[in-house]
Image (cartoon, rainbow, N blue to C red; front, side, top):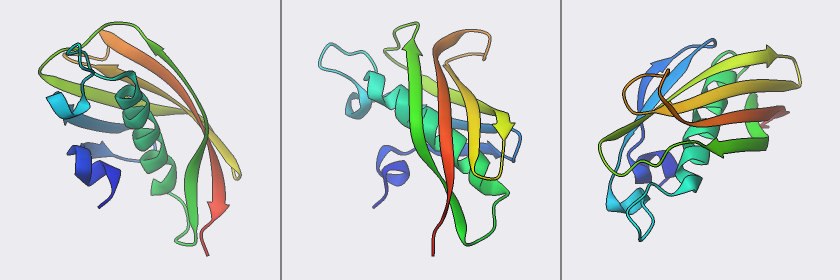
Length: 123
């Protein structure tokens, strides 16, 4: 089973210019203190950016994360966690995306990530 299915990440919108995903906040994605684990913010950011970057690639190519920088801005304890990712640069060999996680609107960002992806041949 892949991580997306295991965690229950849902795709809400998927294009080459914007990706929106959501994840229910459950004990499975939380630290013992009850806060969403910071790694979940990274998983959501890289997943959204990778899906968006891969959307327009040839079938023999895929986008894989090569660097991620995440700032955790606000603690999350319950409800839904959303991520919205948009490209900053889309090149032939590398893409850079910005991903914002939030609960109610992207203007109320709970974490902010910059994701760099390498475009590789998958065959």
